[in-house]
Length: 127
Image 1 (cartoon, rainbow, N blue to C red):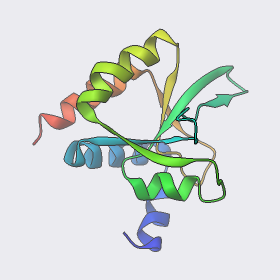
Image 2: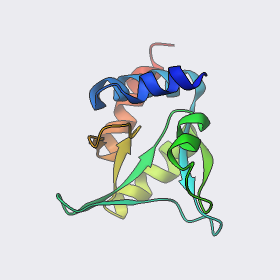
Image 3: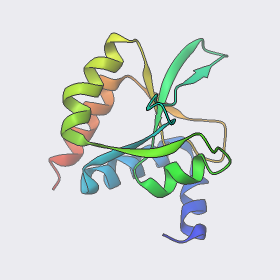
């Protein structure tokens, strides 16, 4: 993917980025997160709303672009079966939301893990 393609997708509004995320993850069957050297994943605290969320990306390129100024973070792939079986229950237990494909604007599509799982399963049924 070229830098221009990456930038044009990141410039979409959060709802369009969410739809893009679903279609790419439906095809690739993996989700990308960021983790540090201790394998702790990145969580973002939304001060205005008082909750934490796990940012996720549809490809390694988007995750890499997001952390390009950080030496401590690196992209980590999670297969969809692992995400459904381990991550969704864990995120629910820890009361963490999911922020889908953060872009260039401050708006992020934040959703409960169970909703993202349902939307992804619907997307998978299209293949």
